[in-house]
Amino acid sequence: MTRKKGERLFGGIDIGGTKILAMIVDEKGAIISMSKKKTKGESGFKSVCERAAGVLREAADIENIPLKSLSAVGVGVPVPVLADGTTPTAANLPGWANAPLIKTMESLTARPCFGENDCNAGTYGEYVWGAGKNAKTLIGFFVGTGFGGGVVFHGELVTGENNMASELGHIIVHEGGRICGCGHRGCLEAYASKAGMARRLAWETVIEGRKSMLTQAVPDGNFSTIKSSVLQEAYRRGDPVAVDALNELALYLGVGVANYINIFGPDLVVIGGGIFEALGKELLPKVKESARQRTFPEASFKDTKITLTQLGDYAVGLGIVAYAKSRLDGKPGK
Ligand SMILES: [Zn+2]
Image (tube, rainbow, N blue to C red):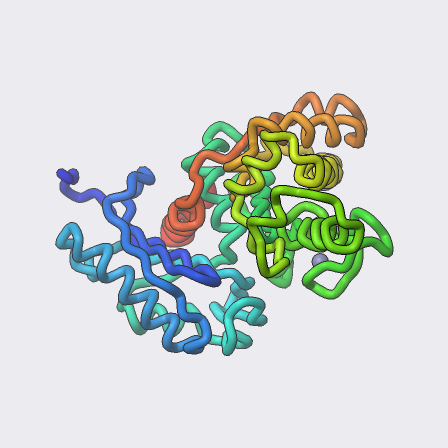
């Protein structure tokens, strides 16, 4: 690929629970090269950071780009990142509680590093280079095995005074309702994610004995690992168990969307993640209808566009680059 002289390049690393994706990106959001590796989270914090730096080096090597030529490196992680560059908790990654993420990545890459939670990064990516290019205030929802999201208000990610806010999946939408992975009851994530749906699917197929083609797809009975493509097929074929569960997911997501429209009055809401990449066409109208019925005043629903995300699997990698660039330049937004 030919590159303009003087053009700045950035590194973006998306450290997920199962895989690490690293990319080299130019300052307009074009991906120059990419590399991927398993996370091997059980190997601990230091080892995951070393793997992450290694994957970035591999991505750079593809185009013979020396790491030292990168202006900065963004690191997206599945936990919050505090202002001092540490990670306070370790949800999916053992050994990450109070880990010095940014200090460690800067010493491994010898570049300035900037870190954010992956869902915040993904939302920021959509804001700068995805569906939200023309938006001022954007709310992003990512619906897959879990539930994630973020809020960008006039170019700034809303992360609260504690850097842990915008946990969009843990607003309570059903007091005393279904138990959530976080330990509380009735969270949005307990209804609008595969993990949440899994409880309903197990109950209906095992306890109530409802017949479903989904049962063959998960011989171990763990519906939270079901592939989005399987849900897509079952929904499109009219499998009653799948249709009921996914329609419920859309209904509850609409409840969440209405709540966030009422708080922020965004001009754009984007919805992505595995389930919506597979069934966005079918489920988005149902989410919109559910949100329309619950937004107050009605005009605020009409003022908000609700659409699907555009960056897919690259949202976090691109978003964390956009974030690193904005931090390096001291200029939020696009
Ligand atoms: Zn929760």
